[in-house]
Amino acid sequence: MDLSTVDLESSRQKAAASKEAEAKQEQGEDVVLLFSLPGGQKAAHSFKVGVTVAYVKAFLAEQHELEFAKLKLLMAGRLMIDPLSLSDCPGVAPGKEVEVEVNLG
Image (tube, rainbow, N blue to C red):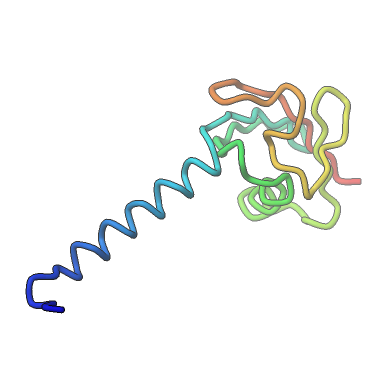
């Protein structure tokens, strides 16, 4: 088999682009979460609907200097459970803005 005409770099780039497209499709589109933070502050952040609640909590802990272990996220008064993805939470859909209450409990 003659490999002199094979373009390995092109094949590698195509594979990387395909993998990136699959990852984006898996995580889904964006949803905007409107957070009511402790102390009365408000914040809005955009996330892919495929990320987990735990990811959102870790993001909030880092961005707003909150203690991750104490964070509880509530949507419409219901606790958002860590291992679930945002798409598993009722009311979350791509392109929507969803209000989320952040408690330190």
